[in-house]
Length: 143
Image (cartoon, rainbow, N blue to C red; front, side, top):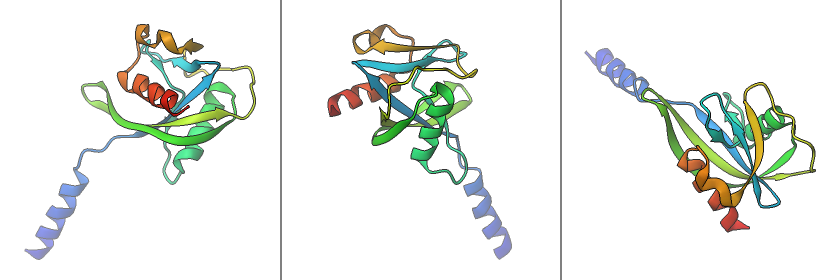
């Protein structure tokens, strides 16, 4: 009977809802923000999924290097939120302010359809999750 109670308790915890963590960076250059167009035709911040045992800031620096061929320093935490991509697909988003260590030309990876430095004043016109827009505004208010 005791074994059953322990097993039940452990299995309840293991059935808890879990989802991936994605680290994203707000990278500004001359009042423009770095955005990538994903396969769903949404604009998004550069970044990607946290790997097991990886430090969040190291993950974000690695992802930006892979996606944009840029080297960055990772600044302060801007925001956290859950993005529901579809009915059964959810991602925990963590955004940080990022700073280029040098102004290099961007070379995007095969993961995205397009890259652009978007003017901050045009954000409201973009097809983009509201959480990303809020993170960009949080970064701007810190400058």
